[in-house]
Image (cartoon, rainbow over all chains, first blue to last red; front, top):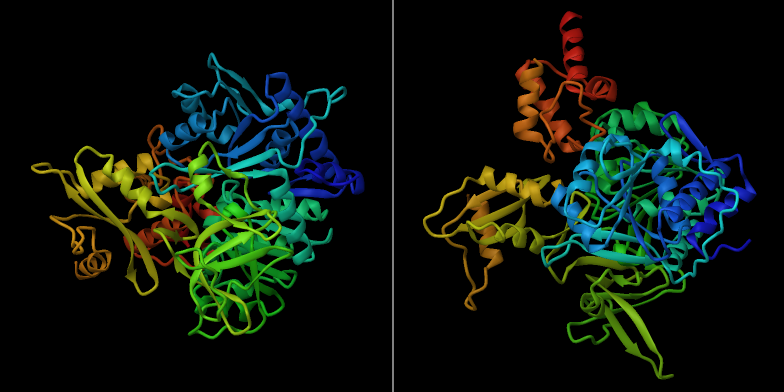
Amino acid sequence: MSTTTLVDIISNSSDKSPHKAAFRFEQEAISYRELEVKTTQLAKYLGSVGVQKGDRVGIFMNRCLESVIAVYGIMKAGAAYVPLDANAPHARTVFLLNDANIKIVVGTETFSKKLQKLLEAQSPLERLIGVQLKVTYQTTPWEEIYQVEIKGFKPILIAEEDVAYIMYTSGSTGLPKGIVHSHKSGLTYAGLSAQLFKVSPEDRVGNHAPLHFDISTFGYFTAPLAGATTIIIPEAHTKLPVSMLALMEKEKLSIWYSVPLALIQLHLCGLISEYNLTSLRCVLFGGENFTLKYLRALMQEWPHAKFYNIYGPAEVNQCTHYLIDELPPLDKPVPIGKVWGANEYKILNENDQELRGIGQVGELVVKTDTMMIGYWNNPELTKKSFYLENTSSNKTKKYFRTGDLVKRNLTNDLVFVGRNDRQVKFRGYRVELDEIETVLERHNLIKKAAVCLVNSSPSDTVIFAGIQLEKTTMISPNALKLYCKLHLPPYMVPQKIEIMKEFPKTSSGKIDLLAFKNKIKAI
Amino acid sequence: MNEILITYICEDLLNNELESGLSPQDDLLGSGILDSLGMMKLILFIEQKYNITVPPQDMIIENFMTVSHITNYLTNKEQS
């Protein structure tokens, strides 16, 4: 059978190797056949409670075997899955439930208290799956799902253009924005990445990223497409590098994909050489720059592994890769490499004119089948994010504007230079500094907020917020931190908040960010 | 000992709102109460407060999953 939607991935692998472990988590494993059955059970149940093609269903849990069943079960029901970050503050999740009009959330008992609170909030949410609560709302535990009779399940006809999942990310307007991917964009990514990294049924892929992070799709889509086994890393292991190393050795991982921070922590714990990780053949990292001294150290510790720098905003999944085949020099950034597959790209100046010269810096725009449909419920932002090129044959080519400034080097590899806006990467997370400012400025005592990243030490960066209060008001930085924790995910809460009389201004009256940063350093 | 750790976690490290107070049996790692940097800070705090060294091979889930795991670990360490 051909694979035309993400749902086909599991069905086909189940036909080919029914008894092979598709996913592993702690002491448990689920085979492709079991996964096929359990996702059908969930899909049938979702259909029986009114889920229709095109609906959105939320997933609220730590990664585990149920998260795979939820991802594929929801898509099998014809709906799109929306990962909800269980560590995000309540108010932010309620916003997502409303924005995506989510009536059903699939979860686990771990977060039953948080889920109950969500049910009671003002939102379309009316039903929980995966938990049992003594409340007036509808809740259905997993045991009940696993008893659903799959006979008579009528597969939902899904087209490749149909929405498969929506991932929310930081938005500069102060509200998160949903990146909408189709079965086609997700499946194209899975196919290209399986091919590029030669993923085979023998591979054991480590899934470190949570579901709301786009790089999770490698473990969830690519590995099962290739018939490999994905090892889902439990949340606890991500916080204790020594336990993580022990797990990597025990599970004989062959492919690893994470943000650099997770790898740096493995190196810094000091015990990396105690663990036999010779099975590791590919180390993929992306999301932000890898501090070169640590990258070099890790490459020396694992000389048998190939290291790849992966680049691509969540809107296009992956788009470039660079194989680091020798120890990178300390004084030059590692390139993001070449655009993959049959995809096209251009480097544009601020007037959308193409730059072709070596070393010329401009915005990277990409045309690829791994590209999102658009931003959820936001046609204006969607329109702004695409660059349309009229070709001679009277056709229009659609490119995604990455907002990333790049240049070509002498080997025609792309090198990341910076951003053309105020988006930053902080500890692997994508953060719009404007969102933090907007959230702070919603506080009724705050007149103006200015947020930036500053170096707190040679090796550490923090989010700094300078605050101007309304006249004759008082509030402590700690109280403001608490306020931020209620409205922003943990990684976006400023580490340092400083009440300031005024901000340095440019001649045009805007905040002079350079002078602002210098002032902070002096504090 | 439990009290000191709970106070420090609640006042300095807490990642997000808790529905009710922190109990010694609450899973610090799996529930998102701490992130990986918070965990490192907690270990540093313990080292300074109790004037001990936590060697890297002890920084494992079995010793740090809950406040009660941590106090058990510290008590055993004291005795040995």
